[in-house]
Image (cartoon, rainbow, N blue to C red; front, top):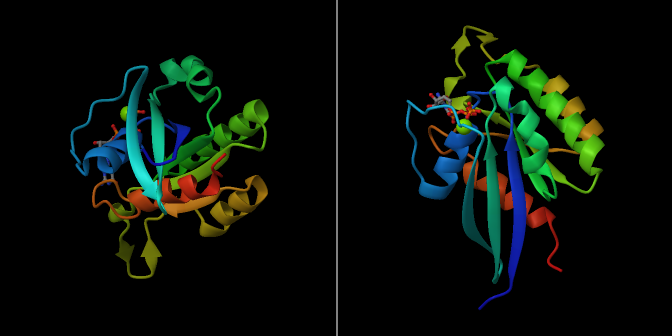
Length: 176
Ligand code: GTP
Ligand code: MG
């Protein structure tokens, strides 16, 4: 077969930001409005190609509800990549994302590739000059610079930028 790089990737972020929906869109090109909160975590795999090679993602989709927080270290242990997800219409979810980024760097060092993912961009609307974007774009940029993050704004609902996130993460990791 063709050379294959396996990447362990973990999704972290507050409950209901759309982690499972991002994974469902990536793996099955599907979306549902009524998703149940994840219990514990879900494990899924997906192959993509990069040039003439293959990347196999081993994905841990964690549960964002606070009661599952103690389990997270078990799922991010040995991860080479993380998607830290927030909802761009929800300020609190961005604070939580910041906490996850800090925890990942503290526990795993600087080698892990982290993509900050602002989901639900389909919900962005304008009232005249006023947007319902809940997180200041400068603040996002500062965090990304400080912590060396990739940044994507996506919609699991429309599929916008979902594949691009995984592709970009895959391209950051060298083949052995
Ligand atoms: P936990 O498993 O509890 O951590 O939540 P989660 O982050 O996995 O969220 P989930 O994917 O279950 O989505 C929560 C809700 O947000 C569901 O009702 C989804 O349909 C909705 N949702 C997810 N992504 C989007 C999106 O891009 N746009 C919109 N409008 N809704 C979304
Ligand atoms: Mg979930």
